[in-house]
Amino acid sequence: MADRGSLAGGRVSILCPGPSLISWSEISPPRVGVNRATLAWPCDWWVSTDPTPIELAIDQLDAAGTRPKRLFTRRETILKLGYDRPDLHDRVQAMSPVMYEDLDLPVAANDAAIPWGWTSSTAALAIAAWLDAGVIHVYGADMGEFSTAPEDYDGYNDVRYNRTADRWRVERDVWAKVVDWLTRLGHEVIRHGSA
Image (cartoon, one colour):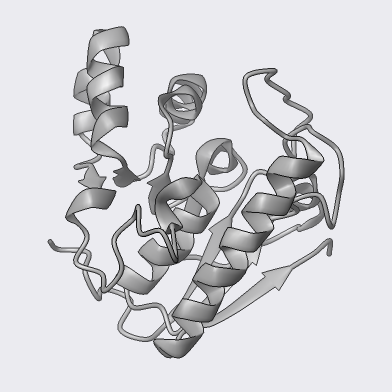
């Protein structure tokens, strides 16, 4: 796959949709956008585990001319989008989707010990490693710590999202496992709070 190792030890910024994301006036490229965070700044890559964020953001991205060139997602998400939203098929395929299941990483997305594919934010970390980012800066990954608000950075809240204290506790645990794994592989992960 063309993207594999494309950052050659360089830096990357991951944008997560937590409320603290809006506090940053600039975030350096290249950028990996998680779910609706792709709307905050133009992103090179888009990570979305579920179809809902894609459905919610793609029209706005297209209207602004900022749809990312690449999409990283699960095979199940592409199948669900094709079934539920055939009108999105060509636009999604134009991003040359890369499936989590196809990434040649030493740990699979659904590995019990390090389940990096469990959420879009943890998948973004693994994908940054796959791109061979030496330093991974993460913004808006609040997970109930930097902000307890259930809304995204722009005030959007969808009741379908599970943004409870229990969810954040589990996600922080998975996050810590993924960061530990990436650190052992030689990647540095820097999680930023509010600016």
